[in-house]
Length: 229
Image 1: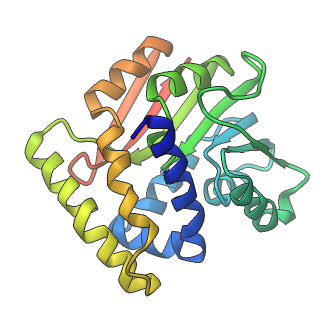
Image 2: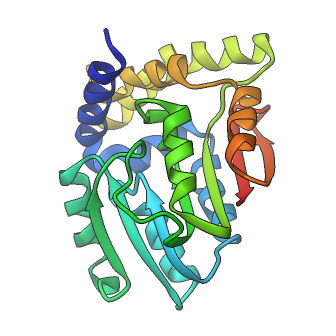
């Protein structure tokens, strides 16, 4: 199956997670999911910010409540998820807009944004190298790129444990919470198969940013990446 077809199915599966998304992810991330969003928001800069892969607005909400002098644009390939974000963030509509688009071709001028933040989303991109390359282009010189996500550990044993957990345990946990045996979390393992290793991700970022800081969590199964342009 081509990357594009796989990507399309993954987006549809994410849309179907619906009301159970946050509940399931809080459990399967062992409590780290929202913790890393919180840590990312400690790095918030002033100005115009892109939430890449905004989904229903979980990270955007944290950004907006963390800083009163920021303007956030939510970018996502899913119209239905962005529609949910506009509803969830309606008290912030003077500081929030939503745009349908993909990471590989963000519809913004080069250097027009002060920062790009993304949480649990770059992993779902069609092409990781092109996604990071083109997201970096819209960031001004001196701006930042912050990414939190599930990692792809360099250690083979830890990587194998992570893949077993995501392939078998995550769908089971999701089934218990959502009461849906055939739930969308079955496709999560495909995003891990397609994502670069932690080491490869760092090397990609070094192509487009002056400084790259990579912090590992949960035995390097999760990470917070901060890049300075």
